[in-house]
Image (cartoon, rainbow, N blue to C red; front, side, top):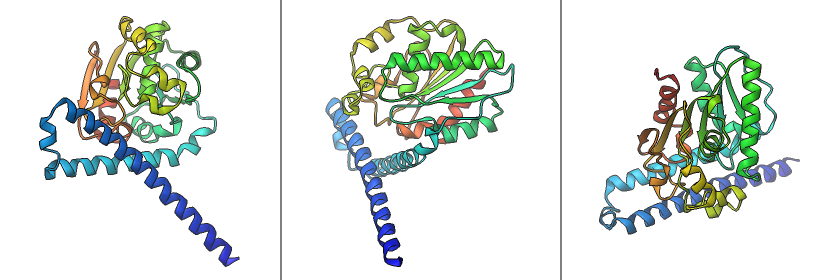
Length: 283
């Protein structure tokens, strides 16, 4: 029996190490692709690639993103069960959190805790499957918003979307006519103009995020959502949106961060504080 448990423990430890190494490899690959793209666009970067400051920054970003990705994937199981805690403070505008591709509601662990500390009581999440298309997911969000409005007796909700979640929020407001039901929308690291890494996702959602896709052309040609205060938070070191300029959205309030990776936007303090500020900012 002792031998069996020893072997079992060894297998689990080996699998965990491989899991971490796989995530590390993905992060290194994405950042290497970004550097390759930028170095070709700006030859000056080539000469500075081995400066100690740049090496420390690169190692820090790779370590952070690997840890955040591993943690996010490890808590995914907790997000698979149906949430039983529904917002119940009637009259208070709820905050609906929309996660990114290949994540689920569990990825909002840190932001939910922070929002509660900031005094937000009505916080809701929803699971958005990566195997459905953007219109199906937008319909799920629309139903959830109406459910929250009717249950809490409010006219509008706040939306916070990370990555693909921000694109779904925009689709709901700009194309599906949901702007009248949204007060504030905070977007984190969304590929507004697509990402050259999107084809690697192997999903129908990845297809619509290819730069120049029909969906993105339609979305970016639609008028801004009238009556909604939109804040776009992005990082100059985003390793999943390539080129980085595709994270910017000119018609709304912009918040630029640095030395934070794509997944870090839902964990790092500067990004979380930017979300709080956007939701609490007075007109």
